[in-house]
Every structure is written in structure tokens, then in C-alpha cells.
Image 1 (cartoon, helix red, strand yellow):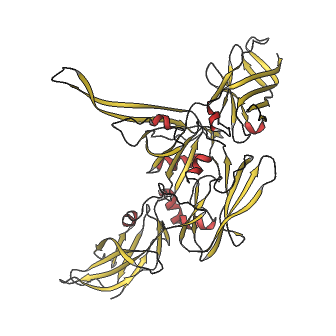
Image 2 (cartoon, rainbow, N blue to C red; image 1 turned 90 degrees about the vertical axis):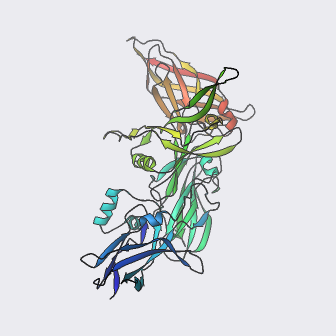
Image 3 (cartoon, rainbow, N blue to C red; image 1 turned 45 degrees about the vertical axis):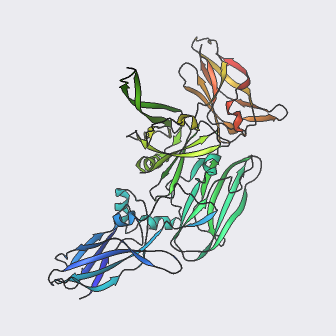
Length: 517
């Protein structure tokens, strides 16, 4: 008798998806016959040692002398998440890839003697999984997620190639890319191209490693500060990997939101490949604390008191305006088993990673004509506490910098609106500002509706170093104002170099415009 394995998992699999081994024998007519399989994992050291993982699996042979075993549940229990322990370095070899094989054999007879021990070839696995429809599509194409990643030299991320980032995410070593080295030994070089507001882009080699091992995962630093992109006039940068001068990865683009922006919300979660992924929400924020408690009466004093008080934190955050391509990324965020909010404390200048649970159950898709859309999520901290710890005040979120009322027009000839042409605006704020990444909203006081949006990059900024304030001016073009309505300016992102400026108000606001009836 001999054994073979006609069905095996892909060379590199995800443990959240189907991972099947079938064993076939040439003869199963023996008494008490059974086929057995044992998963074994490598220690991936120079001196390789294989150890059994999970239980010995047994199945009878079917009419075709075969038995099929699913092993994904066994491998799911062998690794932990890297989300709480990011590495420090530019290109760091990770042990998150599982190298495994299976030992299969047969037993029969009353003594259940083992016969024909056979070892499979070598296979690799990562935690995570892809959707059912995607999995079936790849099966129909005789392909896999790994084949697709390899073909486009992709990082282990489903995020759109363009995203926003800032220093808070980077300072916590959470702006990362994960690169699976599908080729043999080679040199990997981390490249960065930085874009500036006042000069041509510059490309630098950040770091290199030689003899990168095949089927190893590499953690790539992608924070602009840690990559040396720390000049105040840097507005964006690209990150990619090269192998001896040849591109070995796709290019990822990051737009920089400068400063410690209190309005932004930071979330970290495990993506489909079980790799940490972060999101920055730029919209409105709200939060509250809920309390449950009991009451008791003292037998001596007859006074009532509260007891067993538990605090539960609820929050709501908005994505801000985002493009249609981000809907798939939000679906991955919703479906992630582990999600965290990343909080920054101004009081202690420290960071806190807090697990969260979504209360939101639905993620509407944008309409066919919607180029931009906004989505709100409701969530709560994944714990209750007997004592409060001012957690609401550790948030990086707050209302946007809202400046004083700017204009209250009188009605035009139609007594309904004022038609303004080439309106010019100028206002001053304390601190040094940077013209990159931010947006100015002109809002109506009556209903908080956005009447006009101006990109900060289209503004003129003049910094007065002696008195430490920045003059911001811009032209609004054609604009119709509702009569008798007040308007105010709101900055969507705090763009101050100095985080102390977060609490400053506008100094002056001047408007010059002509009225067209």
C-alpha cells in the first residue's frame, strides 16, 4: 500500500480560508482502517526543528479510498497579532509567517499500528482571510490571493494607494507596510520620494538589507518623521521597495496632515492579512459616558448610597468627505475582529491604544453618482470600569477651530440672497501655520451647512515671527450668500506647527467684496 496527497492548500494560504489536505491510499480493506494527519510547524531557525501542532486527526477512507482534512483551525491558534508590539527599524524581518508541513500515515488492525509515514512538501500561511466571493473567484481562475499580490508586487494591504497620515500615527510606529518576500535571497532597499511646497521632489535610499529570506514577512517603516521626511515644507511622500535598483514593490503615496490635530480620530485594526492598518477620520466627533449603578441603604444611618457603579464609554465619529474607493476599506474595518482607537493625551504627551466594539451595524454604499461621501460610525470601548479615568479627555478629537462670525450680508435686489464676485478674505491666527493638507469651510450659522470649501493649499500664508501669528488670505471667487444669515470660518484640520496653538482664536477677520444683484 502507498499514500499520496492529491489535494493540498495553496503554497501560501490564509488561515481564515479553506485549507484542505486529502490523503489517498491504494488499499483500505484492512480491519479498523483509518487515515491520519498531523500538522507540523517549523521553528524557522538556522537549526530547523519541527514540532507537532494541534491534535492528531483521523478519518476513515471513503469509497474512493480518500479522506479530507481541514487544518485552518489548527494554524489559527499558533500566532498572535503584531498590533500591540510594532517593531522599531526600517526593514525588520518578522516571524509572523507560518512555515508548516503535514505528516500523514495509516493505522489498522486491533493494535492500530502505524504504517507508511509520509511527509508533504513545504507550505506557508498567514493569519487572516479573504471574502467568500473573492475566494471562489480565485478558485475559478485557478489563482489565489497570493498569486495576485505577487503579480503586482503588492504590500499586504487593501488600502487605496493614496492616503493621509500625520505625526501621531507615526510616532507610535503604526504607519507600517508589510512586504512578503516571494523571491529567494536578495537585497531590499527602502526608497522614499518626498514632495515639497517650494522645491522639486527628492528621492533618497532610507535603508537596505541584504540576503532577505524567501517566504519571510518584512515590516516596513512608513512614518514620514522616522523616514527623515521632517521638513516643514514637505507635503507628501511615496514609499516603495527596490531590489538592486529594480522595483520590487508597488508605490504607496501619503499626504501629510501636519501638527497634532485634535479634531482627527485615529483607528487601528487588523486587515484581511492580519496586518495592522490605520485610518484617520477627519469629520465631526461626539462622545458620552454611560453609568449603571445600584443603591443600598445603611442599617445604622438609614442613608442611601450608590454602589457597583460601572462606566461605559460611547463615541461617534465621521470619516469626513472621502472618495468612493474607500468604501471597500471601510468594509474591511467593519469586518475586522480587532479594532482600536488610538488616543493622544496632551497632558502627558503619551499615546493609548483602546480596544473598541462597533455599535453601527450597517455601512451604506454611496449612490452611483456620488463621487464623495461621508459615513458616521458609532462604537464603544470594549470594557466597562468601576472607576472613571477621564478617558474622554484623552481623545485627540475636539471641535474644529471655529473663528468668529465673518459676515452677515443685507439682502440684494431680490431680497433673498447676495451675489458676491471675487470675494477676498483675510484672517490671522496665533502660531505658525503650514499650507498643506487642510481645508477651510465657510459655514452658515443657522444650520451649520457648508456654503463654500477652500483648500488650504490655495491660500496665501505670511508668518510674523516677531509677534508669532500667521496671516491667511484667499479669494473665494463667485459666491452666493443667503440674506440675513451669519457665516463663520472653520478649519477642517489644525495645521499649526505648535500644538499649543490648538487653543488659540482668530485675531482679526477682514472681508472685501463687491455685490452683484
